[in-house]
Image (cartoon, rainbow, N blue to C red; front, side, top):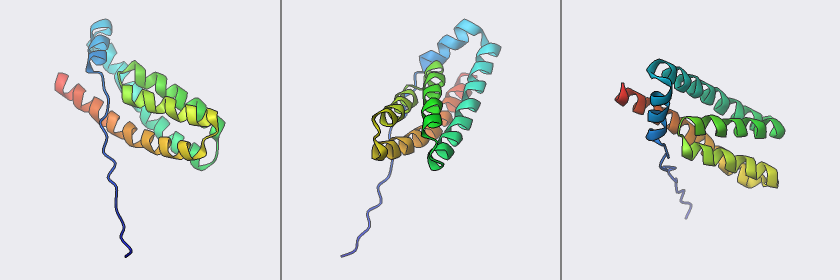
Length: 126
């Protein structure tokens, strides 16, 4: 009667490719590439830091980190990541420890997938 069900976490990543197009139109190709690359590098570093901060119970720093991640993600059209980062901050603000664990795990999953999607979009436009 012992049966283990494995749930696959597969959710859509919400990207706004028009936002990337706007960056290219406003800044030109070289500057837009620089902004996008820096944003993605920052996001990758911040995702790793967020996970570490959670494990080390640095919740105040984690809140600052995810708020900054939301701003960076919004800048390059990662709307799903922006929303989930704000959800993590909301869980911290409400003292919802279970919600924090779940939304942070979701942030890490969506963060990785969003970075991949942005790279793929850049490859298609180049």
